[in-house]
Length: 333
Image (cartoon, rainbow, N blue to C red):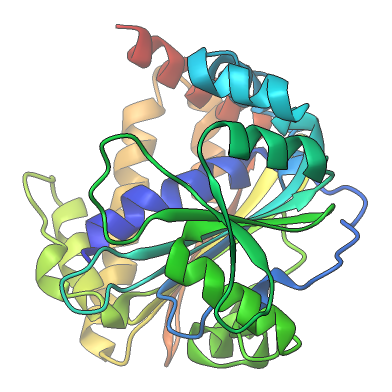
């Protein structure tokens, strides 16, 4: 599993949602999803989906959700289940674990919200899903049957209760049911694996992610054709063992922070210098088109201590909306 694959699978989704999240009433949890995540996970991220509605990017993001929800098989499935993602899903927890041997990476997605289990069960069954009982007797789940699929790791869905649904490959879902039966105290919530770094993020943040880069081959993080100081930053990132990212929204702005841990003092200095160089480049790039954003970038703080390098700052909603509009125009070309 490569660093670029981790980034493409998890971090973009978490960061986009992080830029859109707003504080709201806490979700009533019937289970702690982190207690269900395996301790060998290399990535875990949490997004408070129910907080998207009032965020600066909500119109753009929710429009995309509605568009996807209204297409073909997805629209028919949602109609059969009575599920409206933008309203019925509160929290999404995503985790990736490394493959055993040459197998595929193991992914988990845990949804918290309000679900009509009877309708979802009927919709799955009508599409060929097979109801199974886990080997340990810890619970039931549906094995998904994909047309033409030859994978030795079929997908699975466990309808745990009306507030909790778990999706992933069959082995991962079976393991979750076993952890749940044991009280869910063997997962990341116990402080094992990357769970020992949970203190580095605010679990009440609108969205956050932890990535254990020490278990991803550094050779897969290449600088490519990136310009300086981006190339220097990508090269120095090879010494980073853990990446912690989080976002909290206040009114019409988003507080963003990211920390990379490294025990190499020279590389910590290089990362800090590269980040400062990138901020300077961005200021030069926008000073004519969006001069009001130059002070925003100037207020970003970069700290280098004995453990790692952190960058934090506040981004106004107007800037986030402009990013969404630009992305939308670019996608439409």
